[in-house]
Structure formats: C-alpha cells, structure tokens
Image (cartoon, rainbow, N blue to C red; front, side, top):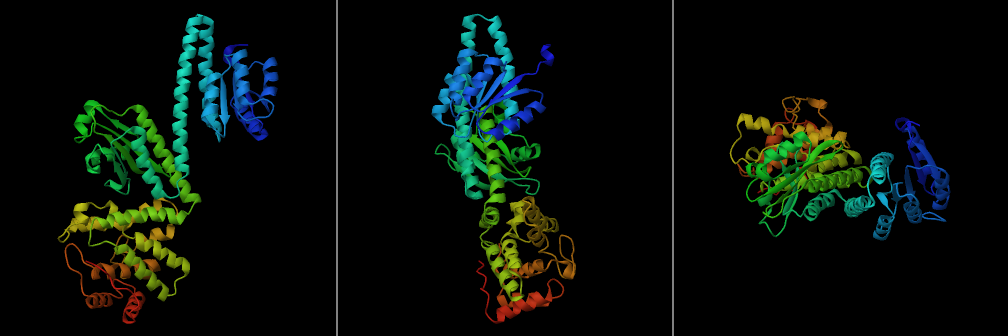
Amino acid sequence: MDAQHHKETLLFVDDEENILDIASEYFEFKGFQVLTASNGREAVRVLETERVDCCFTDINMPEMDGLALAEHIHHTDNTIPVIVMTGYPSLDNTIATLKNGVVDFLIKPVNLEQMELAVRRVLRQRRLFVENILLQKEVEQKQRLEKLNRELVYKVEELNLVNRIMSDFAAMGSTTDVFRRVVDMTIEVAHADGAQFLVMNEHVAQPFEVVSAATGSVIGVEAIRLPEALVASVVGDEIPLLVDGCQGKDILPDPVRSALLVPMKIRGKVFGVLTAAVCRDDLHFSEKDLYYLSYIARNAARSIENLALYENIYQNLFSTLYAFVNALEARDPYTQQHSERVARLAILLGQEMNCTPEELDILHFSGHLHDIGKIGIRDDILLKRSGLTAEEYEKIKEHPQIGANIVGQLGLWDREKDIIRYHHEHYDGTGYPEGLQGEGIPFLSRILAVADVFDAMASGRAYRKKIEEAVVLDAIRERAGTHFDPKVVETLLQLHQEGRFPPPSGA
C-alpha cells in the first residue's frame, strides 16, 4: 500500500472500557486505525498478530501492568513508541518508564487533543527513528538512543515541575492566596530577584500593584518595578515578553538586567501582568523561564476562574476586589475606610426602607466597591491637594463606569454593576455618567448616593477639613428632589435624629 495512504495503527491499553471507547471513536475519526486491549497480556497477543505504529498504555492494570508491557515492547520491537498514561504519577514509575523506552508520560485526566498532539509528535519521531535504524550504524543508533534518554530525563524533570505547579494552584483556597503564590512561585522557578502582579487592562489604564515580593539581593520592590510603557505593551499585545541584552539596556531601569512580563487572562481577557526581574550580572532569563511563567499565569487564572465558579463565588472574588479597594484607600489617609462606612450607612438606610435581604446584600457589595473604579484614575488627579480643573473633574467622573466594567468583567453581578455605575446620578437628571432621572435611577443607587455624599462631606479630604455634621445634613436636605431621592433623604434625617447610625471618623 502507498505510504501516503497507509493508515497508521494505534494500540490503546486500559482497563477502563469507557476510555477505550472514547479514544477509538476519536482517533478513527482522525484517520487512524485503532486496536484496543484491556490489559498488558491481551496487548501482547494483539502485537503478535497486528502491525502497530504507536502504543498508549495505562500503568495500573490487572494480569500485566503498563510498565511490564512497555518493557516487553522495548525488547521485542523498539521501533514502537510507547506513551504512558497514569492518574497517579510517582518518581518510581517515571524512572521505570525511562528504562523501558517510553517516549512520553501523560498525567490523567488527559484530554483527547493532548493525546492527539502526543501521537502525531511521536509518530513523526518514529518515522525518523526507523529511517535511522535502517541507515545508520550500530554506534550511531546507540548515540541517538542515549540522546533520547537524556531528553526523556529532562522531560521527566519538566513534567515534575509542571505537575507541582498544577497541584499547588489546585490547592489554593482563595484568590488572595493565588496571587501571593503566583509571585512566590515566580521567584522560586525563575530564580528572580523580585516579582510583581499588576492589574492593568482595558479598564485600568495605570498598573496597579496587587502583590509583590523581593529577595535579599535587592532593596525593596521599587528596585524591580518595570516601566509602565513596557507593562502596557504586554497588555496591548497579549503576548509574553522577555527583555534582555542590548534591548534591556535601553528599556530596563537600573539595576534590572533581565525581565519577564506575562499577561494573565481571566475569562479570555487580559486582567493583569505578572512581572519578574533579576539584578545580577551573572544571571539572565531564558525562553524556558518565559514558558514556565506563562504556564504559572495560565494555571493561576484557571484556579481563579474555578474558585469563582465552584468555590465560594461571592467570598473569593469579593475579598479580592475589596483588597484592591483597601490598597487604593491606603494611598490616601483621608479616604481610608470610606467604603466601609458608606456600606454600613447604606445598609442602615436600606433596612429602614424595607429592602429585602437580597437588596441589602447588594448594598453591602456595592457600598464596599463603589469607588473601585478609581484604580483607573491617575494618582496626580486622585490625590491632588487642591481643587480639580474642569478636565481633571471629567477624568474623576469616569470612575463609576470603570468600576462597573471591572465588576462586569467577572460576569457574575449584573445588579451590583449597575448600582456602582449609577451611584453619581442625580434625581433631577444632572448627574453622570448617563444623566438618569428620578425613578429611572436604580433604587439602590439612590440609597448609595446619599450614603456616599454624607460620608464624603463629613470626613476630611486632602484639600479641606471635614465639615460639621449639622452642616452636611442641611446641605443634603436642601438637595432633596434635585440631587437626591427625597424619601432617602427623609430616612437619613430620621436615622440621625434617632442617633441610629455611627458618626464618620474622617481625618
């Protein structure tokens, strides 16, 4: 038969019948001839009568296990590549497979696409291998086998590291733990002097540090902070980047000698960038380091998505976002705990206005995160100690939309997203971002607006001292029906008169 039309034959050996059925159907559809066996002894009988081009085998099987089968194939026809699959990888099993000519080692669960890639790769290698056996002398054959053995040893080391990365992130219990582990593992795997995870994406224009770490070889994380333009380029291109050599001298700040930047995607969109840096002249990152960091970022993102979907959806993502707000407010002592106070007052107003438990939960979430969009506002505007210019005020007005986009990117909280977006709308339609009016503004946004303004006025700011509580209440009373929902204002005044909400603790 013409080699071009020859169907290559695969032998699958596994004691799980459903795996054999699925693999047979998939690979027959892909144009292969498929044979199956439920254990090693049955596979040996198949090999005695059939021509096989590649063998997939599980390790743990009755009568004759996968290691014994691999040894048998290695001694009877070492041109047949063997790929081992196991759900319980161990160092002993891995070493044993190397002695028996195994060319790949896959850890269950293995998807069909991974299996197909492995098959096509080893079959290409097999064709070259067979040609060499036919054309080369015995010494040349031995050299090739020794090289293959070295590659397999490296493959095992790589698989062990990859497996550890996977297992580490699978064990994470919260998104905060994931981000911390990302940075620590980056330093460990790439032998970096420092690493950072920065939030930067289509909604957050400036890199915002979530977590960082540095070794004793550098003084503080500031020494390994990479230029904003470099981080932005990775966000825009969505491609990992290695900066080194002559290029690094022109781009990297002193004392950084080599840098890695890897985008992290959540739900298919860039959420932030993982960076690593070395400051020693005798160490430079390699493409292998870039590969490992990309793998770390992918597994971290997958862990975050799994936490969001399957484990404490509300608690994990809320704690992550709330940590961002805490970090944001910590940059300005005048606004520390502002979001916490706004949330408490909004809930008190909601309780008094007969909100449902679900609505109170939404107020709790939205109150804590209503200013998260300020992550996307430049510090020179956000922390300005004098009045804002008209242009700067327009920038500040973007924060409700930015905050809604950040929350919306997670795809979980539609109502909360709207409450955050519209908490600066005015009852008479003069607010922002959309100029909604009256009951066209979500009811919970109207509650949040009153709580927000009360705390903002009654607390100190960088550019003014706090305003007396009575003056604040008079100002809010005067704006009932224009800026604020009159019913919410009435409830606020009633709560204050009865002494039923805590006073702000502004600076």
